[in-house]
Structure formats: structure tokens, C-alpha cells
Image (cartoon, rainbow, N blue to C red; front, top):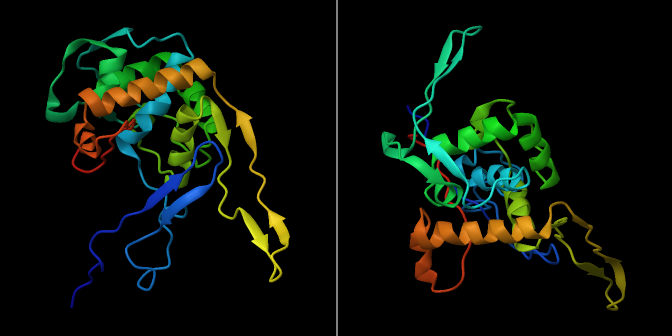
Length: 238
């Protein structure tokens, strides 16, 4: 007798038009007949490095620039109260010395991101994430720099949409209008639109995320042969 997950792998997809908030595509799992759990809005998973753009955007509003230099070097955090030592590492356990802000995001440098978060402050970063639409509970420790707190795909996509929308957050619209049998409008969606970060910050972040695709961890997406800005994120085996 054994217990198996069927299917072994699940996925979710969410596409939102950033200017209007209209949800164009939502896929909550492999097969609705097998599972009615909507992983796009109900599931809260660790985003991993996909959360880093929120930290970097917060840092830009604290005075960082794409050319700011940060030292990528080993660092140790000790929690004597809980007898715990944390030695964060980069992928492949390498350190790269002086690293500019832009490259740190493009190459997804873990240690640099942690140092940035330590500098700008955990509470500030969490408050900033709230402005971008992150509502889930978040760990108040440096591990959030690496996406340790579970959030929904809806929250993450909404946050990214702010960069593309020049600083404006638009609440997602799942139903644009409801008509009666005669074609009369009974209800119409009126998305709430508010400015949450400065336009120049959003513009710079979009440029940085384009760099992730052109020169960093997201280069495979260039196969689409169209302008793309984004960020990779993994949580397994790291």
C-alpha cells in the first residue's frame, strides 16, 4: 500500500493585463476534474528568487542605483537564543566579490540580496511589499530576501504588474461585466487603480528585469523573440 500524488507535478498560470487589471488567463491546475483547488489564487508557495525584484525595488527607493556596488562575500548569521547558525550561499556555492546592483539581480545572487535587505531593513521591505499587493503573512527575518515566505501567484503577478504599469497597482478584474438575457448591463467591473511607487522606480525595475532575460538566469525566454522582462525563481535543492 502506498500513497501517491496524482498527477506528480502540478502548475498554475495567471496572466493579467497590467493597465486594466483584466485577468486574461487563469489556470489553477492540470485538470479541474481531478482537483478543484485553484493554485493560482488559493495556494501559497515560496516564490524563491522570484521575490527578489520586490527587495530590489525597495532598495531603489532607498537610494540604491543600478550601478551601486555590493560585495558578494561569505557571511554568517548566528542566533544564540535558538542556537542556530545560518550561512547563506549562492548557487554552486561561489562568491563573486564586487558586484553591481544590476548584475546581482540578473544573476540572482543570494548573498548580495540578503545584504541589501539587511541594509534597507526588514520592516521597510515588508511594508514595501504590502504596497505592491502582497497581503500574505511574511517572516520577519532576512530569509524573505530569498522568497522564504509563502505567497499566492496572484499576489506575485500583481506586484510585478506595478513595474510594467509605471508604478500603478490595479486590482485584478475577474469579471468585466454581467449582462441579462436582453444584453443589458447588470454589473460592470470598475477596477481600483492607485499609484504605489514612483514612475522612475518602475521604469528602472523593468529595465533590470529585461537584463535578467538578456544577460542573466532567464536567457532561455529569449527564444520567444519578443521583448520580455521577468525573473526566475526556484526553491528546491537550494
